Length: 446
Image 1 (tube, rainbow, N blue to C red):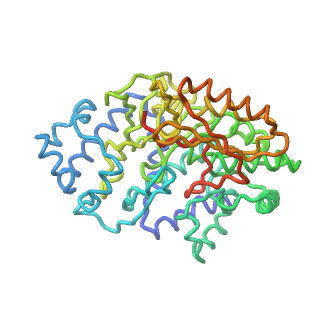
Image 2: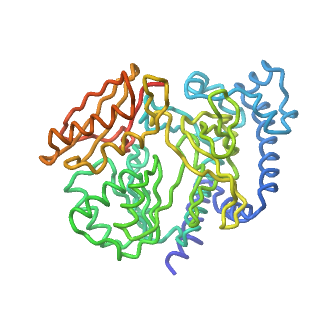
Image 3: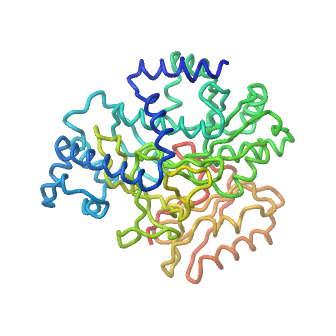
């Protein structure tokens, strides 16, 4: 009853007061998701055409782009036509921030990314973009039989969220039964308190960074805390790559399936996993997977994710390079939704290690050589621009010289001849500025 009050009355009222249209948008998304793939593709292409016309007419940066390329928005009738437009990158956004604002924009809000891979990106959002992101997340939540108003634990570390804990937001979260636990402060004492709060709250859902949820799950296991009978229906892991071992330990300790979500503050909520295990793409985001030559890659082949968020008319993100890699799914989902899907999100381009021979190696290749080794409590690989590697280890007395040597040999065997590896034992590995814990960070680009 209380969940229905929140979902049908309190949250819609909150959204209306903020000028958001998330409620009708969520209903629209829940209808359109059942269209067949061709109908959805046609719908998206029509929306894209309207979006491009508005950008060409009202956004100085894109008016100049269309003019310099002798293109007309009216001639963008297919994705092949669309790909004539240049890619948008973070440096371009920084350089042309004012020119990317629509002349018709109102109530723009300044945002920035966490900067976990370098300099934070400053950009702007209008009410339409925020409403679409809220609606997309809300819809995905309901796929799992939970809703706004169900007790929720949020393990998050973004400075934006943590900086807004004023009285109004605190009361809103209390009314909606959403409890925030800071992912910045994952000390043993704090995690013990987190487990106590989770046990007392008995949440229906968890939401947080994959690494933070996994860290808390492993700590609960070490503390012999049984959380599997609390009635948690789903754990939503987002914000970073969800590795298989993280999914396994989160699901086992909390006694709930783990739903992967892919998105970012700048690109939006892009894909959400349904109970059948498929990462469905949102209708309001055009997603391209591009190879090294800049052309589209077929299903089953890895490509960089390039997005066009169709609700960013006030500050358009058109063909935006996310820096993330993924593989498209080639088969429809058994759930019956016509939404296109990703078979796999492989992580950021900065999650790939580059070998002296020029090979780009997925982070998992190195993670497997360190994970579960005796004495290893935490670890992180950092690759510099010269391709040299550093491995930071938090360890205990079980990490013998022999174990360390086996780790070194395994890593160098993976990376190949000419590789350099320095192993450094440290007392702790701090999170990134965003609050995320990353196993691999590469500053090389091959």
